[in-house]
Length: 71
Image (cartoon, rainbow, N blue to C red; front, top):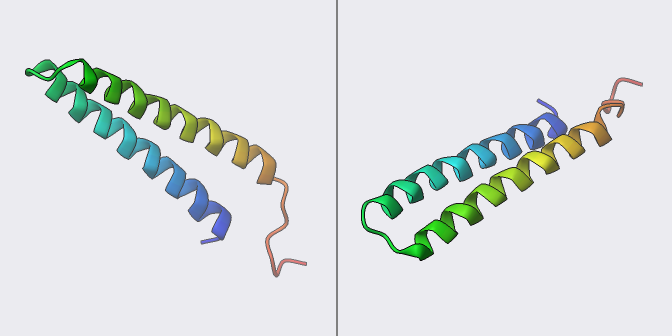
């Protein structure tokens, strides 16, 4: 597995974890949490979206790179 593919995989897993954390925070906020919990949900969703945007931009920037050792 190349470093590029590992990087994309790690970004995807991080975004999924951030969305899972947002789901957990939503559950806590709806079962008696205060407004601060909803801000945490918003922050987690924003972080997940930023990771997805970064992953797409990284993929587009590196898709034409030649793997090391294939020359």
